[in-house]
Length: 405
Image 1 (cartoon, rainbow, N blue to C red):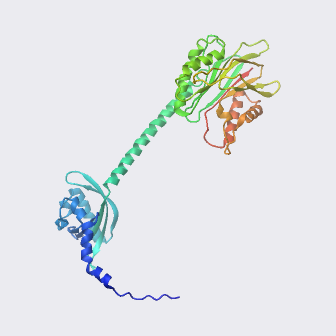
Image 2: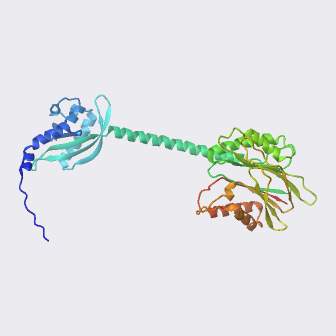
Image 3: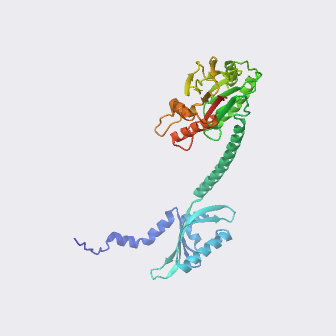
């Protein structure tokens, strides 16, 4: 259906509005919160809103008529405004939502969002400029404060990043620290913190028995806090090893005594042990004790099998009333290997939430048993990383291995 437009005749209301246009304009200029103004071609005020008059300290907006920005602002600001307005008059092109910095005669500063457009008479003749400004000083200050906060945050992040790098370098030197060279015993290890620093630790403390003594620990938590505690543990293991009496249980309990009460809302798992003297057939005894680190693996070279060994019951360190397990001896023959690792290996999960598990650990170590012992544990780590299919580790990972030769 074709719509037919009909001419709408002016009714009484529209005629009243037209007749009251001047009064409506006056009401707008009196009541609006915006700074509205009309200027002639010489940038002199012809009309202004009361809000603009109030800003400049005038009781009546008509007091602005005939003045220019040079009477109200600093010369620099007034000149910029004058140049902008003359360019609008010359080109006929408006300026929309321009952020302007207002510098007052007393040196104070405010910010406004200004729009200016050429004003034409009904005859088409250019009469001057119509402008409207809104104070955005509060918003501008807030944005500047936000920018300053972001800058400070970036600086703090850079300092933190630098501190992390320094901490990583220090911890990498500290862990494992001195690695002893013992005839007929190969030592291999892998230490991979989840972030640049972590809570896992391996070390080989010097001791009066001159035996191969080792400690592997895992501080509850990750990152800087856990890393700080590894420094304490490093000191305590070195101190406890000074009186080592061939009993890893006593050694762990001594470390536990130093830790208890010093780790806030946390604990430490640990495994310690030492090798006995080499026998004529090349075998050695490995004497172990643990504190919450019960499972270890023994690879029997002759039988080409891996045995999961459950150590006696023992509790974590750092909590009141806890104690390490009784000592247990493992007989290692030439070619045999011993493996221990923190829970970051076993508990590593794939995207479906399935843990890698001890069965896969044993399978991987068995698969790569023909490789040198260091390459074997490196291959285990690579297998775990491929299983999780994520670029970042979920936990600190530490693996320790010995092989009798």
